[in-house]
Length: 255
Image 1 (cartoon, helix red, strand yellow):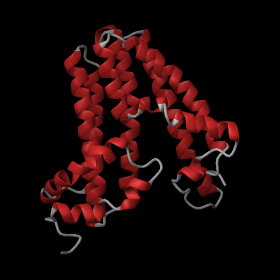
Image 2 (tube, helix red, strand yellow):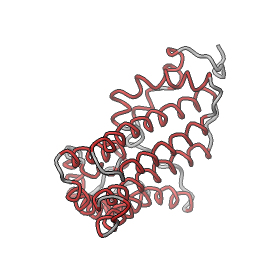
Image 3 (cartoon, helix red, strand yellow):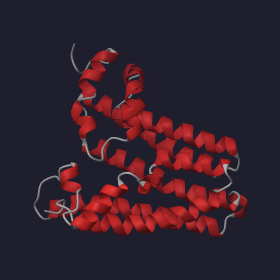
Image 4 (cartoon, one colour):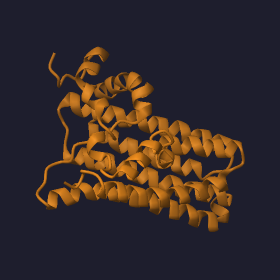
């Protein structure tokens, strides 16, 4: 069967669109994707292919669902918090499927990569702002907690910019693409290397990733700790931005 067929079997999709290299990347595959979402995504990918959607169209759906999750999170109460969790799970599913569709149809493109990154940037910026609005009590009482949410959002954007600027710096210096491996990302210095290894067991910096973020927001709602979570995110954002910058400068990523 041609790899461009719109009606592949699930087994064919798994073989062609989930190569081992997909799971071996240091920072490319979310743990939820490895744990369960990639088990289900080929079924959804198969349906999306039969509907005739393009990979980029599915990426746009991923972006819209992520922003919808942030919008829902601004609403008070337990049900919106649960809704945000479920919507981000849907976003992760679309995020898996758009890549699988691109690999199956051989339609991988810079536009697709750009939209995918944009979707994550938008979602993970909107969520802390949404949590701040939630901590203030909703859209009718926006105040200081929303401001702290904005601060947290800017800090997580700074972390993303630090990563993106690695690729910009390498291109402008005439270097090739950096390898996405633990060996390359690991700091050369002993102290930073030890700190990075320790943080691997307590990855608090992942609090800004959409899946983890919405789960934390749900727990905060259950235990009446939403405002404490907003403050914690600002602290985590400062530590992560400074630590990430130091780790990049001390690693092989700019060599």
